[in-house]
Amino acid sequence: MTPQVEAFLEMMAVERDASPHTLAAYGRDLADAEAHLVEAGGLMGADQQALEAWFADLSRRGLSAPTAARRRSSVRQFYRFALGEGWRADDPSRRLDAPKQGRPLPQTLSREEIEALLAAASARDGASGLRLIALVEMAYASGLRVSELLALKVEAVRRDPAYLIVRGKGGKERLAPLNPAAREAIKAWLDARDAARKPNTPDSAWLFPSHGKTGHLTPRRFAQLLDQAALAAGIDPARVSPHVLRHAFATHLLEGGADLRVVQTLLGHADISTTQIYTHVATDRLTQVVHANHPLAKDD
Image (cartoon, rainbow, N blue to C red; front, side, top):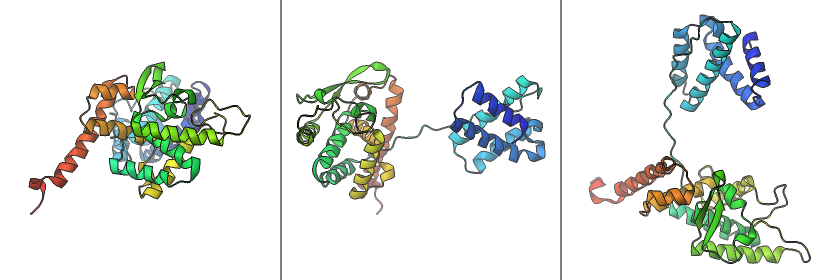
């Protein structure tokens, strides 16, 4: 590490309050640039042409667009610091164009895979199985964020509501629907939950209580339970997460003909452009169905 890079990282730590993780990322990015700019005099001696050649080489080495964008940002911040310190009279990184980053399509599951997950949850013994069924059914039926689902109070479902009132991002409230399957799963879980409570002990306020610090099930634990169910269902666990259930909710609604504005409201998206990405997923899925089943799309 050169003295200039060390001084830059120290500034980021002291003045910008950068975390150790962020500092380590900056250090790796600048070390990569320094190593590839040796013949040009390193970061302190490289000119604009050398910087552009280093940046172009990132994609040839197979680095993703987000990683390349982060390295560009690290180098540009370093040169701004170097200018401010008077170490350089120019900024050779000023014309580095940000790499184009296509917005990744959200992962989702088919209806058959959702059913397989529920079947795997049903195979679990006792209350743990009923709890997992309720979690999956509720996430898939309502499109709740995992934080919203796990923070539900038990009183919110005691009277078997058809909708939940959820406080989402920005403190905004919205209605989240519960279909008959989700409501039946909640009833079964409540019976098991109440039966498991020891006599003369106060009831937890949470729908999915836990002994941890938060008092309720954590996203990490929910994800672990989904991993186990996915393995039992023959699904790659890497494709399954609490958030994927929310993606499946939105995608399947659009595939069924739901209006985009309705899906936006149900998901609690402030901007419809966030919701529009699901139209691409639904279109891709429908295209696959047509290619697989339309007689004119089949080879002779």
